[in-house]
Amino acid sequence: MTNDDERSRVEKAAVRALLVFVLLLLQQANARAQVQLIANAGGRASVSLAGKWQTIIDPYENGYYDYRYQPSPDGYFKNARPQGKSDLVEYDFDKSAQLSVPGDWNTQDARLLFYEGTVWYKKSFDYRRKPGTRLFVHFGAANYAADVYLNGEKVGRHEGGFTPFDFEVTNLVKEADNFLVVKVDNKRRRDAVPTLNTDWWNYGGLTREVTLVELPETFIQDYFVQLRKGSTREVSGWVRLAGKKPRQRVAVKIPEAKAERVVETDADGYAEFDFPADLTLWSPENPKLYDVTVAAETDSVSERIGFRSIEVRGTDILLNGKPVFLRGVSVHEEAPLRGGRAYGADDARTLLGWAKEMGCNFVRLAHYPHNEQMLREADRLGLMVWSEVPVYWTILWENPETFENARRQLTEMITRDRNRASVVLWSVANETPLGDARLRFLTALVKQARGLDPTRLVTAAMERHYAGERAQMIDDPLGAELDVLGCNEYLGWYDGPPEKADRMEWRTVYKKPLVMSEFGGGALQGHHGDPLTRWTEEYQESVYRHQIAMLKRIPFLRGTSPWILTDFRSPRRPLPGIQDFYNRKGLISDRGEKKKAFYVMQGYYRELSKGF
Image (cartoon, rainbow, N blue to C red; front, side):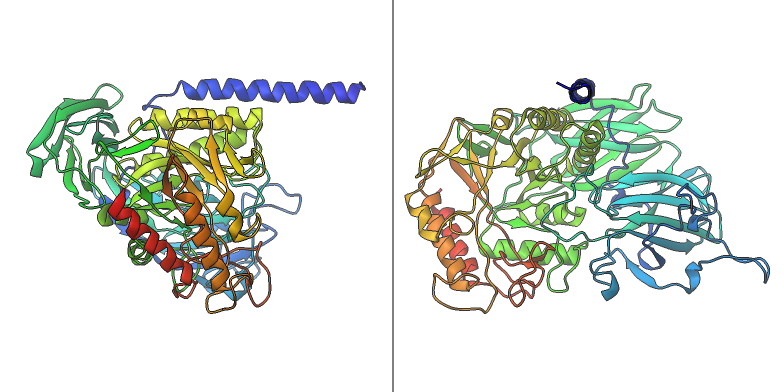
């Protein structure tokens, strides 16, 4: 062994040891050590900054770095203007192009369809802050990295393209002529989450809402109000205050159920509670929501919350104590009809309405946390939800910074959505390769998810392997850590002809329920031919018919989410005349036209709804 080999071996061992140490520390964190997001930001006093923002495209990041590639103190965030006719300022937000927020830049300007890099956003506003209040700027999401400045001063940075974040700006805001500048960079990175290679469009920009949120000096930062695990009659949770008066009396009220509990927060502003309540349980058949109020001495917040139990028993999934089959479909956050990133209530109603029309009681929101409107609409419509972080394919399992990024995104997702009755599954990964480092990484995420929310089930979309010519085996070691097994398979598309599924048997070493989280094939809507011709609706229809016949024979199958509801953009799919940079596996086209396979799944789900 050479000295270089020995040095490399020692360095790798040191990295592994450091990652293990970091994971152990993170596993010891409790509910008080969470991301400090403002819970239910949309339910607070706020001012929307939606609309047109001035923007500057900056592929070389000249607005941030000088010519020696050092951060410049006079970057675009200063919003400088010439003070005299000889002054040199080489940018001008007010004369630059505008983009709409929320929205991705790729579909607003044809020049930016494939663009990956930096775009600077600027919004001017006036704001008269009330005495005794604090002001925060809240972002629903920005893809991917966002550096935020107010009036030329940096207020924070966030990484991760699909989760919310906020920064306090109380001491920086003025009554007039404020300018909020955000540097958004969607360049893919090997050490990021997700990593360089995915199968969806890398939509960049301020893709979700941006708001100014005004709160009391001591406010309700976060709260968790759900049924105690294993119970259908006891509400349990906690509340956390932030500010100079942490010790307060806090009342948690469900007026319609005539249920209330008053607790006192401690020196950290934290208190736990539990109390009995006679509640109508949330379900797909009756998605009952209650007005719930959390009221402290200095602040109060209300929202609509549903109550239900979710658990597993052997190979069954139990909703409110009764076995349920998850009749689902996978969904990307692709705007229906217009294309681009979906973000609003109208998009959510259309996408989830199509799922309901197909007979779904469940949706898998892949492969990242979707916008909050999707979850709230799922609450209202009675659709159970699988919510996932973008730990996707082959990320850097031994990089502690990559793990911390994934952990933070998981925490932000759960922090935002843990009061949503629709969410029944937290997913920590999709199609990740086997290995010791990967298993340590994902096991730590599973423990993090359970520590943040002990009431829900944890899953991941795993792969399978052959056990002989006619058997598929699920024995991924990660399965031992999960409540529900997820598995992606493409018999009939990537693996043989459609009829190959007819002779396939499924096995697992785990006595746990399985959700077949992906299956299907591609078709160009309106392209017809015989069932053996690729890309025709008839070929896709044949794939689904053979798949369904196989799925019916899996004794431990308790859910399906075929890939995918609608066609969606993907740079991996260039085939001219067929794909044109769209993944065509949708059951509905990008124009909203249903393919034949949609009706095959609809028939299967109608049959299941009567017989399970």
